[in-house]
Amino acid sequence: QVQLVESGGGLVQAGGSLRLSCTASGRTFSAYAMGWFRQAPGKEREFVASISWSRRSTYYGDPVKGRFTISRDNAKSTMYLQMDSLKPEDTAVYYCAAAPTVVAGRGINEYDSWGQGTQVTVSS
Image 1 (cartoon, one colour):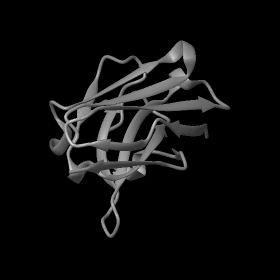
Image 2 (cartoon, one colour):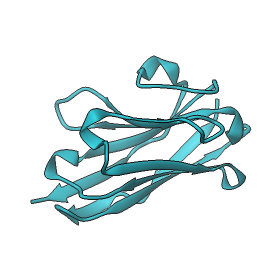
Image 3 (spheres, helix red, strand yellow):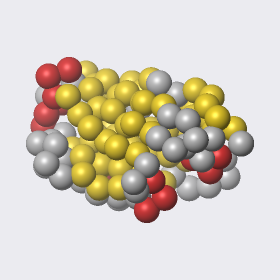
């Protein structure tokens, strides 16, 4: 497994932007597909986006398509989530996750390492 630490969460007004970061340690970062998930109070954990180890493939959940952008810098062992045009319904704890495979999708069970989460709150 790889150790993951998220950062960049906070409070923002609707329509604003935030960039989340996820820094990995412990294993070769480039060997993992990576993903972002989120969980709002009282709701199940929801897929946000994923990116392959090569950065060639990216996938997004329908609620964030066209507003969020996932990226990674393998040299820095860091993944990013640029979140634009934020809405109050984007409020959640955001988690990064690593999957020991080339490409990973929306299945929670594909991922074997998780960060502790970072809170994102969007006010209306």
